[in-house]
Length: 81
Image (cartoon, rainbow, N blue to C red):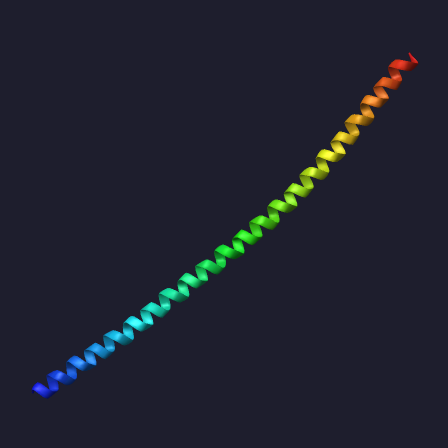
């Protein structure tokens, strides 16, 4: 009976170790997946922010050019009157 109990305790310990190993591996895989998503999101957000910045700068440049042209035209109209 003592032998059976010892074998059972050994099996129980091995099962516990195996379950802990699987659990640890699962947790690590989940953490890795979350990190990959976070890194990917950072890259996507950064690329989008850069694109928006480029578009904003282009719009500001076009608006400034139009404002400058309007001011010049207004000045010419004043000069000819």
